[in-house]
Amino acid sequence: MRGMKIGKVFDSALRIAGAIFLLGLLVLALASFWPQMTALAWHLRHGNLVHVGEYTVTVPRWWYPEVDRAPSEVRIERRSDGFSMMTFSVGMSFVSAEPQRKALESYPSTLDPRVGWARAQIAEEIEHYSNTTIAGQPTVCFEKFHRFVIQCVPERGDVGLTADYTGKAEYLPLFYETLSKITKANASPK
Image (cartoon, rainbow, N blue to C red; front, side, top):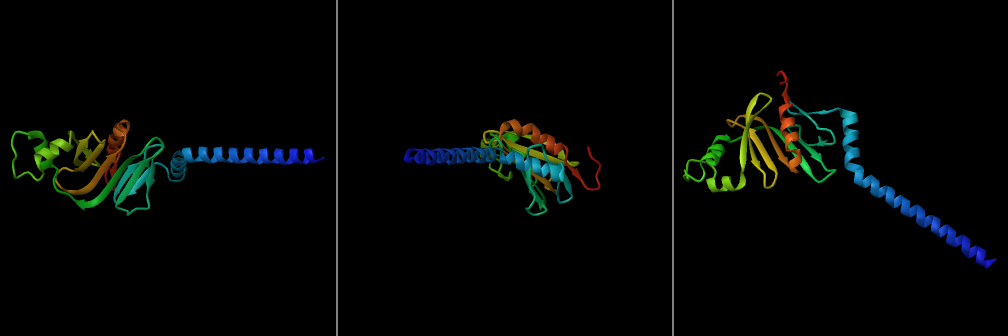
């Protein structure tokens, strides 16, 4: 009689341990897919667009925007396979990109003190730059591939949209594609 009672207790303990183990696996599975589920839920609820000031930015699939920030800034993140982030800001006036571009092109020929940045620092940090347009505004993107960082600023120091990228190299084309799709209110899309 006593052996049957111990057997039932042992059986119950195994069932409880099994249930706890399965619950742990479920929590682990949910945690590993949480970034994708969050992004999917946001897209289902809001679509693919987010507004930054007077600009409209397309949010790529499986990326999640942080929209609770100031209306003049939005951060779009992808966390499912590491961390990559695009940040878009509007409304600030910037120093012209021209000094940085000239310094990068002429390094190390001279160290012209009229250039705002030290040329050696630029050549060390920036590996490439490219000209692009964001919603019709000429923009220069400075690329730092050793850290996969891109900073895009209005070309002539205008007030406008700036865009930054930090993350995996495989998403660089997606970042530039996102830039090409940005529109401004009262402006025709590209």
